[in-house]
Image 1 (cartoon, one colour):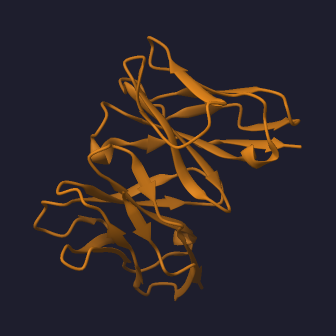
Image 2 (tube, each protein chain N blue to C red):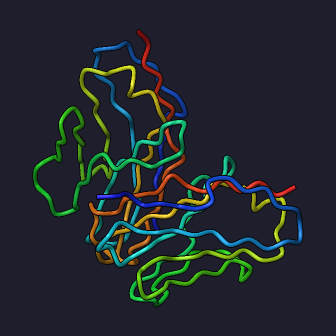
Length: 113
Length: 114
């Protein structure tokens, strides 16, 4: 069984600062993918970044980077230079051998001006 | 390229009724997945369709069903609605199943059961 744990129900960050959203996972699969999605209040899930379990380099997409520590089973999202528009729910998710996406409970990020 | 579209966006039904939700994937995408999002349970996988065949199913009762048409559009049906079925139902499409970074979500259908 797969499990995603996001221990931060809410986070606050000042505009232009960096923030790290935590995610730990549990799986018995050798091959898996880790994802981060952003969900604004409108409800749509927006794909941010992906990390494969065999990828040696940490994934980066613009201001988003994924700090992948395989031995610790963690996949933290780092957002640099936060913007007001980054305020949203952020979900960590995993896809294993069964191809189902398993989501964490999410972290509500609030960016303060 | 148009994104994933879901209709209707909002729906109010009463207990015992049935409902059908529709999802049109991105052009060229042949895999469609459905998820239920509630405040208590979070995001849960319902099922996935590819080439008109259900490939994967989550842990939901048989009242939840779906299908996919030859044009890749998908419908989800919930029969004998219960109050607990009130949720945001999200549809996601990808070119083929298993492509990790190509799953795009629609805006969702918010279902309220009274």
